[in-house]
Amino acid sequence: MKFSSQTIKKILVPTDGSDYSIHAAEYAISIAKTHDAQIMVVYVLDEVVIDRFSKITEREDIEKELKADGQRYINYILGLAEKEGVKAIL
Image (cartoon, rainbow, N blue to C red; front, side):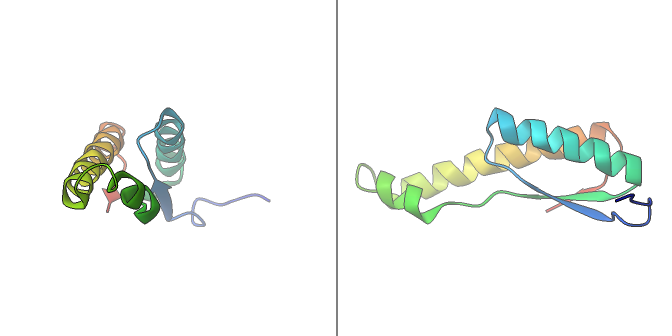
C-alpha cells in the first residue's frame, strides 16, 4: 500500500521510557517529518504496577514517582521532535 503525504496527519507515540519505546519514538518522528505530520505523545500509568508496588510503599508515593518518570519521558520525546521540527502534542 502506498501512502501519500496527505494520508498521515497524526502519529500516536506511546512511551514507557524503555529503549524500545524511545527508538519507536525516533522512528515515528522521522515518519512525521517525512509526511509533515504531528506526533501525539502519551504515557499511561498501569494500575496493576501501582497496586503491586503499593504493597511495599505508599500508593501516593508510587503514583507521584511514576508520574514524574512519565513526564521526563514525554519531555525527552518532545525535545527530540522539536529538534527535528516536528509538531508534538500531548
